Image (cartoon, rainbow, N blue to C red; front, side, top):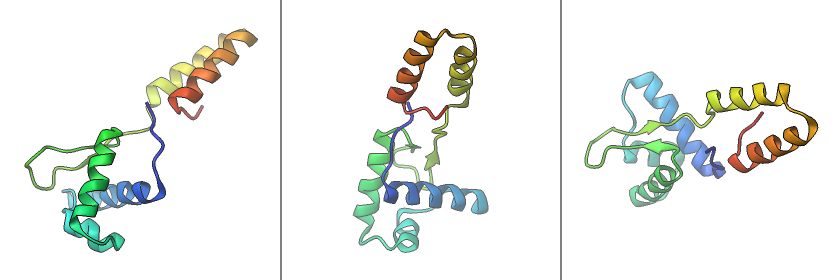
Length: 107
């Protein structure tokens, strides 16, 4: 399910993704704190834990630099919904769009 993230959470996700792409490893909590001007490492930890709970991030407990941004687009699900919408009657389209909205899918 696509999860709605706060602006701060989106900034953290984008930073982790960009950092990982350019360095080959995820950033440390301290690097995230410094880059985004957060007040403490514990504030970063709280954001990270919330992002893990929202299934936006994956981490290996006890392992350094183990943050992994999870794909929130669910392209296969969106494609399935779009194909179903093409052949659905008007009532089915309404139901499919409501279901997509509940799941947070952008069709």
